[in-house]
Amino acid sequence: MFSIDLTSRIPIYEQIYENIISLIVKGTLAENDQLPSVRAFAKDAGVNPNTVAKAYQELERTGIIYSVPGRGSFIAKPDSSVFQSAVLSEFDNAAMACADRGIDKQVLAEHLDNIYTKHGKGEKL
Amino acid sequence: MFSIDLTSRIPIYEQIYENIISLIVKGTLAENDQLPSVRAFAKDAGVNPNTVAKAYQELERTGIIYSVPGRGSFIAKPDSSVFQSAVLSEFDNAAMACADRGIDKQVLAEHLDNIYTKHGKGEKL
DNA sequence: TAGATGTACTATCCGATATAGTACACCCCC
DNA sequence: GGGGGTGTACTATATCGGATAGTACATCTA
Image: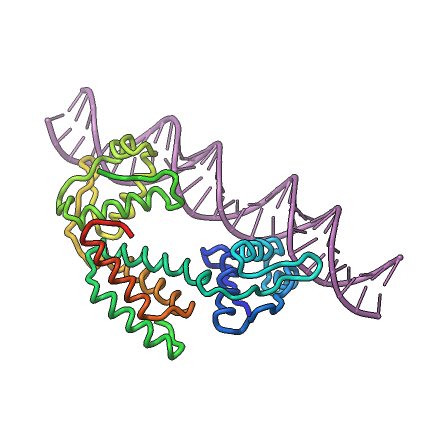
């Protein structure tokens, strides 16, 4: 259910963070669904419970999940703006970097077309 | 001439790397122009000469500059594809992340419009 | 020859990441 | 009530990338 790449340069706790959001966006996880416990997730993914706890705490800090001591962690009321603001600003940064490099807007528009065409088919670029 | 942010999470040597490219794209630095010496740059920016050397070595590795021991470092023959490939793949990644978050293509297209409109005026988003 | 250049090397420091282990308070259920 | 599971907190340790410090060397130029 969760895919963690231990060899990636991206911190594990960040991968978990993104993973949960992805599952919410896809609808696999819905409001008030319970997440695996910190210990269960850690054992399953082969990482340290503290690392999972860090991801959960970050998810709670941004209002994506809520945790109840003694009970568990649950999906909060989905707020798409929370999921989208981070990736949108990254998109802006990437686009501005392209503009700085003299890349034409038309080229970026074509990249968008390709990505959104293949995305519907579940393929990767 | 060079702007380095010591507080940024982006490594200094990477900032230097991007900085040089930016000046080439803007036309401030042209083919065969001489770069500041490793020591001069380091003193000017308040960083360690080794850090500048690392940036220069990376720039030489990607063919953007060429260094001659005893003489200095110089701008190589500009090749726009070298400057653009990295930022383009970052753009693709950002766009795919947006697609994963359920952001509509139209929204991204509007962001592109804004960025390219303001870019011509030298403003920031 | 003197000085500046790029380059190489070792040693050290720091912060982020991750692990290990322990402990505590809370909640649910038998 | 008690046991087990839960989130949370804390310290200690290890690793790694980034950065600094210092030194050294071969090369080129003036």
